[in-house]
Amino acid sequence: MKRRLRAWDNFWFKPAPLADIAFFRMVTAGGQLFLYLFVWRPVGREFVAVSEIPHFYDPLAAVKLFLLPMGGAWLPTLVSVTVLYWITVGFLAFAAIGLFTNVSLAFAAAGGVFLQAYVYSFGDFHHPEAIMWITLAFLALSPCGKVLSIDSLRRRAAESVRRGRFTPVAALDQMSPFARWPIRLLVCLFALIYLSAAYYKYLAGGHAWMNGYTLQYYLLQDGLRWNTPLGVWLAGQHGIALISSVVTVLFEALFFLVVFFPALMMIAWPIGFAMHVGILVLMSAGFFEYLVLYLAMLPWTSFLRWVRMRRGGIPRGRLPVLFDGACPLCLRSVSVLFAFDWLGRLRFLPFQEDAGARQAAAIGANPEDLRRELHVIDREGKIRKGFFAFRAMAWHLPLLFPFAPLLYIPGMSIIGPMVYRLVADGRRRFSTCKTGAGRV
Image (cartoon, rainbow, N blue to C red):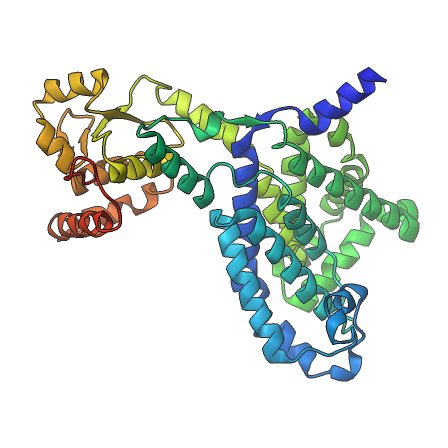
C-alpha cells in the first residue's frame, strides 16, 4: 500500500521547477489569447452568424447553468455576448502575464466555457476547443503564478524593500511538489482523446482505415472543399497515405504509454505535433488548441537551463550590475531586472557590500554616482550608466532581447537618458528613498 501511495505521489507531486508550470501558463493563456484575437474571431464570425438563426438555439447544460438567474433558456443578445468576449480576452491577457493569476485564469476559463457552449447551442459542434478550457480551469488551481509573473515580481520587489536587502532567487531553480500535476493531467487528457479517436476509427472502418484509401478519400474531399493543392496532390499518393494512416492509428492507440513512461514523450511529441500541423495544412482542419498545448508541454525550463550552462553557467561570465542597496526604488528595479534574467547573465551587487565595494573601487565609481544611477560593466570592460546600462542589459534578458535593437535607433542616445531620468524622478514621487538620490 505504501509503495502504491509513493508511486502515486511521485507521478503527480514529485517536486518540479515552478518555472515549468509558469511557462505552461504563459504559452497556454497567451496562445488562446492569440487564437481569440487572430484566428477564431468569434465577434466577426461565429457570434454574428449564430445570432442570425435564433430559431436553432437550444441551450446546452453549461449555458443553462450560467444563465440560471435569467431562467436558463434566455437567449443572450449579440451585444452581451460580445462584451463577455472582450472581458474574457482581458482575463486571458492578465493570465498570460501573471496579473491576479489564479483569479484571471478562473474567470477566463468560465468566460470561455460559456462562449463556446453558447456557439454549440446552435447545433454546430466541434471538439478541439474543450481541452483548452479544461486546461485553463485546472491551471487556476495550480501555483502557476509563483514565478515568472507580475504577481511574483510584485511580491519579490515588496519583500526586498521590506527586508531592505536584495536576495537573488533564480526562478528556474525554485521547486514545488505542485508544479507537475497540471502538465501530467493534460497528458492524461490527450491519452483519452487519442484512444477515443483510435476506437472510433476502428468502429467506423475497422482495419480499412489503415489501408491508405480511406485517408486518400478524406484528403481529396477536404482538399477540393478548402482548396488545398498539397492535400489534393497527396490524395493521389497511395504509398504515403498508407504509411500516414498506419502511423496515425498506432500513435493514437499507443499514446497512453506516455502516461506511464514519460520519457516516451520525446518520440510522441514530434509525431503528434507533425500530425496536427499536417491536418491543418493538408485538410484545413484547425486543431489550433492542440498545437498551442503541444507547445506548452515543451520543456522550456530544461532548455533555458541548458542555454544558461552552455553560455558559461553561474556565476562565471556574468555582467556586474552595481546599484544602491539602501534605496527602495533601486531594490524594486533590481528585483524586476532579476526576474527577467532567466539565463543568469547578470550579477547584481549593492555597492555598500564587500563584493560591490571592490567592484566599484576597481572601476573608480564614487558612492554619489552609484546612488544616482545604475552602473553596468559590459563585455569590453566599459562602464555603462543609466539608460546605457539598461541598453547593455537588454541583450542578455530573453524577454527584452527582441526589443534591444530598437534602443539603438538614431536619436535614442538622446531621448533614452531623458526618458530614463523622467521615469526615475516620477517613481521617486511615490516612494521615499533612504539615500535621497536613488535612481535606477
